[in-house]
Amino acid sequence: MILSKQYLNESVQKRVLKENFYQGSYFGVKRPDRDQYDIFISYSWNDRTFADKVVQLLENCGYTVYIDYNDKRLDRNNVTEETAKHILSQMNKCKGLLYLYSPSSSVSKWCPWEVGVFSGMKSFRCANLPITQNKGDDFKKQEYLEIYPYIDYELIANKTLYDFWVCENDQKYISLRDWLNGAKPFVH
View 1 (cartoon, rainbow, N blue to C red):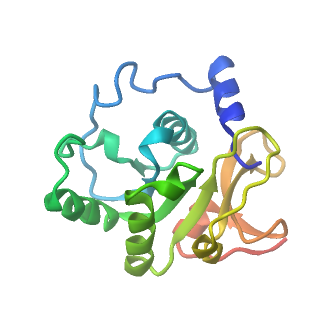
View 2: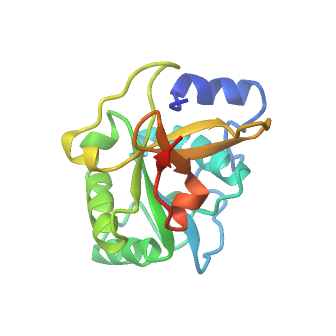
C-alpha cells in the first residue's frame, strides 16, 4: 500500500505508532550520531508529524534512519553553509535516500537539493515514498522524480509482518533491505 496520512493517523489510534515518537517536541530528545545509516529521510518540515511516523515504521522493520530533527548538531533557527556541509556528511553515511513525496515536499527548498545531491553521490540510490491524503489515493510524481522507483509498505509473503518494498511497477519490486544492499527490483 502507498502510505497515507489517514493510515498513519489510524496506526496511532491503534497504538501501533506513537503520536509523538519522542514524547515531546521534535527537538526534545536528540539521538547520538552513528557511523552509518540505512536510510536518509528527505521530507518537508510541513510533513514532520508524518515523517516521524514513517521513521517509526522503518525502525520497527529494523532499519537505521537519519532524519535531521534527531541531529544534535543542527539548529533550524541558524541555517548556514555549515548546515549544508553537515547534511552532505550525513548523506555520505547513508545507503539510500527516501524522498517523502507530498505537495509540501514539491515546494521545499531542501528536498529537491537533497535528492539531487544524493543521486549524484550514491548512483541514484533514491526512492519516492509518497504520502497521500487518504488510503487508496493515487499519487502523481513531478517529472524529474519519474527516474526513481517508489516505496510500498506491504505484508511479507506468508508472514504477518510488514516491510518496505522498492517498486518500479506492480510486478517489478524488491525488498528495501535488498535494494539498500545493491540489488535491483525484478519481475515477480
